[in-house]
Amino acid sequence: EKEQSSINQYILSEKDRADLITLMLLSRSEELSLFHFTSALKVSKNTILSDLKIAQNFIEPYELSIQYSRQNGYWIEFS
Image (cartoon, rainbow, N blue to C red; front, side, top):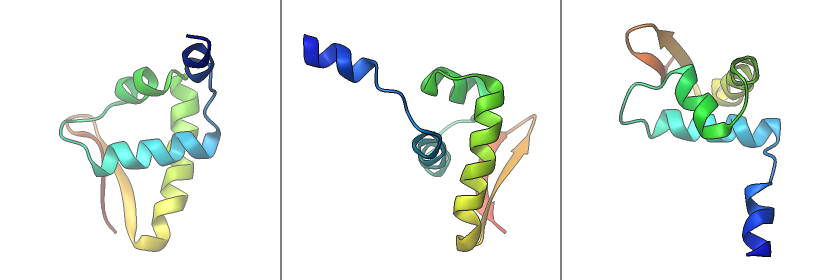
């Protein structure tokens, strides 16, 4: 029980969150919105927007980019 509570209190770093956002985008099976990211990562909308920029910088060398539209949410595509 004590071990479980310490796991629940782990705070993700900026890089951890950007990595998880990238993973969520690469494996998405539905439209992903800011709400999906804020709910999954338990951080604010502004934090997610900042993390999306970090994720973008991470995937750029692979000729990938994060795209967004109101209709389809966020996704990754070849740039």
